[in-house]
Amino acid sequence: MRILDIAKTALSFASGDQVDVLVHHNDYSLTRFANSYIHQNVKENSIDVTVRVVRDNRQGIAQTNIVDPESLKEVARKAGEIADLSPKNPVEIKLPKPAEYVATGKPDEATVSLTPEVRADAVAQMVNYANPLGLTLAGAYSSGSGSLAIVNSNGLEAYNEFADAELKVTAMSEDSSGAAGFWTPRISEINPLEVVKEAAGRAINSKKPVEIEPGEYEVVLLHYAVAELISMMNWTGISARAAEEGRSWLANNIGKKILSDKITIVDDPFDPRSSVRPFDFEGFPKSKMALVDKGVPVDVVYDSYFATKTGHKNTGHALPASSGGHPLALNVVVEGGTSTVDEMISKIKKGVLVSRFWYTNIIRPLEQEFTGMTRDGLFLIENGKIVSGLRNMRVTDSIIRIFAGVEEVENVTRYHDGIVAPAMRSKGIIFSSKTKF
Image (tube, rainbow, N blue to C red; front, top):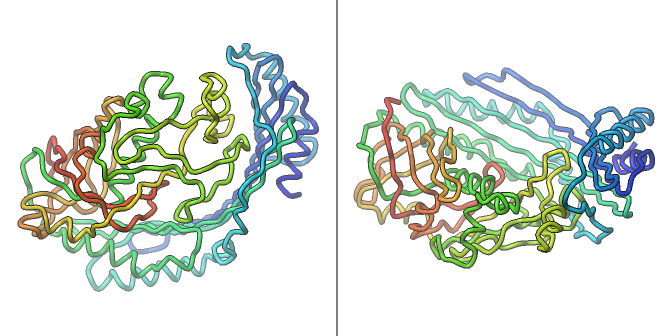
């Protein structure tokens, strides 16, 4: 049974003032490796059904992963029962009306049908490259496809298919490491040797790391590090819910120039470098939206609930009803600039290059103060050249302050963990303490 038919069947069993059904089909595979050996190969093929029933402005949500008619009838009944027992919502719930969607085409067939043998061969290529260099590899290679169907009692029907693949690898020596990754909706774009060369280069060049004292240093942030900072800004402050709760750095600064004029951030659901999404998880059509324009915050994102509550237009950023009502930008793109990473490095008298962060947490959301550790390649820059690897450092700083000081932006953008971003050079980043690794 096609997932659109499953959604319609579940809808037919539900009764209420308003009803919507979301069906997500997931068919993904993963090859994981460590110590330069494949140790796990898994495959998941699942269908998840979420039914939302609204009665007298009371909302009930129920889920199942069993899709025979009796199970669909039962999940619809449970959603109605939960609605009857739930408190009345103070804001009128208005599910979207039928809409036209931008056609996205069929997913790449080679990506959909990628076999475990192909993924294993890629791992072998990378291990054969790393072994003579004395490096050990760990990482994962995932691939697969999925589809999403949404129907509601207003007559809305939305359907989309997608596929993607991602290769992530960490190369390790006794005293250093380097990481690299590549995500794409087209498997032909992944070159395992290029990915492992990138990771291995950082591991080799950061051997015998030295220490520097904590303090503020001029910095080059690779696209991995930039994406991780942008991701924190997105999760903690680019939604209407964050704005309503008084914790949105963006909403508090709309129309004010708080970042470098070299930084423009959009949410673009049709950017081919990310996962194309013609509609949100309520079936509302998506479109490209400015978040920050040349350093000036423009707007936060909305779903139907917060659009009704505030009188703002719906921007098409609903998550599944089961997520708890938190609109989110899922296709964040930081626009590129005109510089290369080598050009950025050449302009620094003394500073650091940060490959990526980990264990990052926001301390103060309005200021976007955060703390976290560097990882997989921290380098000392002197007189325009990388001169050595560095022991990892703890960063405690404001993301807003770091991005306000950006002087150069890379002319290439890449996808990492949900964000398309370039590398950047900033006037300063504050390292609050050092480590022994």
